[in-house]
Image 1 (spheres, helix red, strand yellow):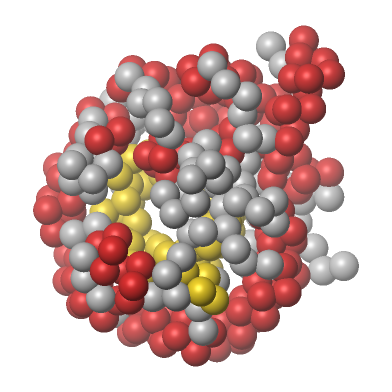
Image 2 (cartoon, rainbow, N blue to C red):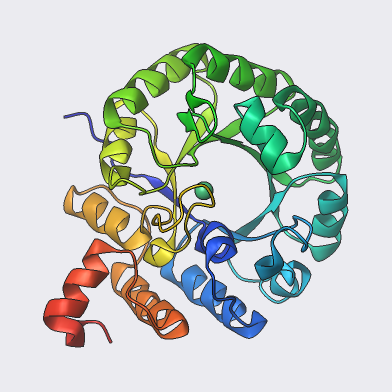
Length: 304
Ligand code: ZN
């Protein structure tokens, strides 16, 4: 097996997780969550989103969250959809922006009210500003493997979108299985091809665990040479296109699997479990993490 020594995990629970949870957390709890996650040793946390609060009311307190967490020893990213979001992000003092677009026009029009091509033009101007402002930047492409409206996304289409992003200066590109319908075979095929075509780009994979394929997809991604992954504490979140679906892959399950394979993540697993317990208390519901569920059911006293 072809395994790396170390993998990078970007904790995105405070953004992708919280934005899709029915229950909204108080700002103080969000800040405490980010502080505790930072103490676990993550290099980067996606902390919030500067999408208009009308669309994501849960993250309307983005400025307050960033202003009280930006001095932690961790790079904080926030999702930035457009110019207005960019202005808010810069003022807040966030360290990095995640610029979003969709690989398919149907999802793009529904989600961002613009085509993929229009998104790329918008992001191009934001990217040049990010360079001037010394802001870290990554692109995040939705519906890379499948779209709720168009079905499986064509690989040629993904290659074109990635090529356009490379041309406008991105060195980090996140590829998202927004609906959770990728499978390991497709992940390996798409990522091997992308890695071959764009060897210099740092690809970051983002899986939702809708059909329980998330960790298998990570493993396929590793085999294709991809060493950066998004995940969410407690598997928080959901999918707006699949009511009742689970959220992102759980950080606990991912890190437990990697550590058992002797792949380092830089994350203190025992501290992480304490954060899990805190999240469980916040939401007062079982977390979407197999590891947490197993511990909770059989020996909950282990998690204190
Ligand atoms: Zn997501």
